[in-house]
Length: 325
Image (tube, one colour):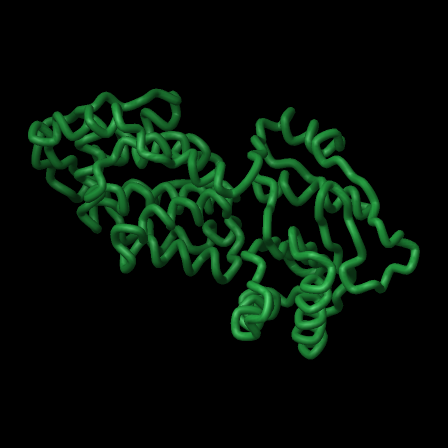
């Protein structure tokens, strides 16, 4: 379920960020945009102290999507930067964005349950900062009611994709029995489990994981997806990634990354891509999803992109090579 959060105060902004990202940021720069055709948000690792090249890369990485999508105003929130390093980072951000005529509305710094004016432009903020508690904010309650889970950190989110050793062993034990599905069979099996919320058997999982290794057939696992159906496929492929033997993991992780992007969960999509690229840095679908994320293309863009791909992917045109699972 989609929720709309209307932030009017710094405390509102700070409560909205973990709900939006799906986790509490740490050692990060978070950017929120306002007033453009579509709202954007981004998180990137805080650059190390004393590394001008890393700082410049952060500025460019955040600036690119804003220019592409004509975002007129932004807010930056720094997590774990410290006062001196925080001022250095926000000076670079302000300089880079204001040169491109993008207004920087606010720069906040968060540390130890308090927020500060990162660049000192809010004289009303005490030197000791202002305490806040996102856990008790109404946004968190609204997110829970809407079924959104907020984890404690990005590491915790990444750990949710850790290998399920018993599950992996079960799939490996039956790989010799797995048959490649036709594209139509792949689409049907995926939709059945995604719609019902059921877990594939080891034989089914082996067949699904083996079939998505074949690029043209893999298309049947992701091209038909819609924003309404994405959440079910996220559940399905999240489980399959955890059960996948290493050699079969990149393709499954790439499908998960696409479904997560389509669901609006960019953080999970990036974590899935980490799994994909750890074994296959050049994976084609993974690179496509990385492009969608890097360009900050919203899931709504899929509605205009999908028809052309639908014409190229005809599940009924594939001949099956084995029995249905």
